Length: 300
Image (cartoon, rainbow, N blue to C red):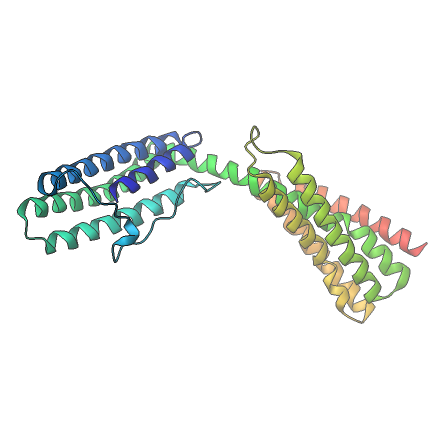
């Protein structure tokens, strides 16, 4: 258990070394302490039972939960690390406390009690680390770095998709609506445009950058986010045309378009630090121009 926990701490440190060096340093310190605990347990075992140590996994012991591996995770946040430390140390401490209460060997009881105290100290170390990072400003720097990663890997591809889906599908949708005055025809055109744009944008985003140098994350995840948001942006003002009454469907669609443009402006303001009025003006002008193009083409 100590060996596995130490490896988990090392994996965590390796994942965040480049982005959160202070957290990585603390994790490596905790890994070294777990290695010391492991050696103390081995020394006691060898003294009592000899050199051969049977292969016993955490999953073999009733009441111990298997820890999920860290190395396959593409993204590991500081908040996830803190939660994981709390879960690991709590489980280890409870195990040592129960084991110490059951053994009648004085040496084993003392060692298990010492290890239970050490695991409790690890939880305190994690809490102190959190407080020290807040006081020194390192926590703010790490949180800001984490926020930038989230913006690069999720917000930017999602926003690009939402803008493309919300704006580019306006022209074919409303062109079909004004040309046919049929809710069903407009819905089918809007659905085809939304799905096609989602597939196109998803592939374009996934193939544009592998994320190795830019730090923008796994290309498949970015492509999925971008494609999904593109499709959602187009379907938002397409779904109202499921209403059979054309004029009612058109009115609801216009309200949805206004809501979509507002959401896009808010996201640009909140995550891209763009002034809200400037963001709203840019998005609304683009949306109005595309809408007018669709309306003129459909009415001709």
